[in-house]
Length: 304
Image (cartoon, rainbow, N blue to C red):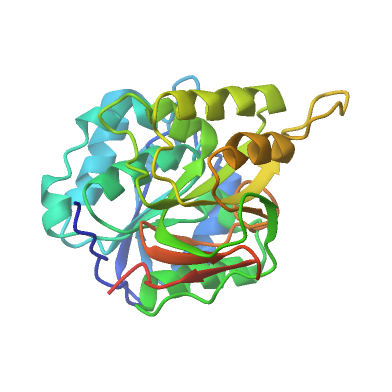
C-alpha cells in the first residue's frame, strides 16, 4: 500500500516554477494568468516556455529537461504547468521522481497534466488538480483564491456542495480523490503509469469528446480492469461533448450508464474542468462523497 504524503506548504514570496511540458503556450493568455500568480509568488520560467514545435511546446528533450529541473530544484516551492494540450505522455516514462519523492512540492495542472498528476500519485505524493496558468486569468477570482489557499493552507478545503446524483446507490463513500481528464486516464491504462484506482473516488472531466468516444473510453477502462475497486465518481465539466446534431445520449448519460454498472454512487456538477470554473482540489487526498446530500467533503489538504 502506497503511503501518501502532502508536500510542504507554499508561502508568499516563494519561488514557483512555471513549466510547459505539453502543448504550445499562447503568450497573451499566459501573461494574464501569470500576473495573478506574480502578485503572490516569484515566478521562475524562461523564454523557452513559448517555444512551439508543431503541437508541442518544444521537442521532447527540452520539455523533459525543463520539467525535471523544476521538480528537482530545492529552491522551487511549487511547479505549475503553463498549459495542457498534448505531450506529457510522450515523456512520462522518463521523468525521474527519486529526488522529488524525497523532497516533494506541490504540482499543479489539469487536462493533459492528468498524466503528471497520476505519476505523482504513484509516488505517494498529493498534487493539485487545478487551473493551468493560461486558464487562470479567464476564471472567476474565487477560483484563483481557491488555488492559492490550497497551496498555502494545510487545512482541508471547504466542501463542494450542490452536486447531483446521476447513478448508483445513495450511500456515502470514502476514498482518495484520483483521476482528471477521462482521455488521459484511459490513455494510461495498461502502462506502468496507470492510476491505481483501488479504493478511489474517481474524478472525471472532458472536453471535445463526443458521447460514443466517452463510451469507448469508459468501456476500455472497465474491460482492462482499471475501474476495479473504484468506490464513487465525481463528474466535472463535459465541454463540447455533445453530438453535432444534438442526438442522444448525452455524454453525462453515457457516464451514468457505464459507471452505474459498477454499483457506485456517481454525482455530477462539480465546477472542475475546461468550462467557466475550475476549482482546485487536492489530487490523491482523502475525501467523503455523500451523493444523497450532493456534497464532496475533503478530509485532507494538499499541503502540510
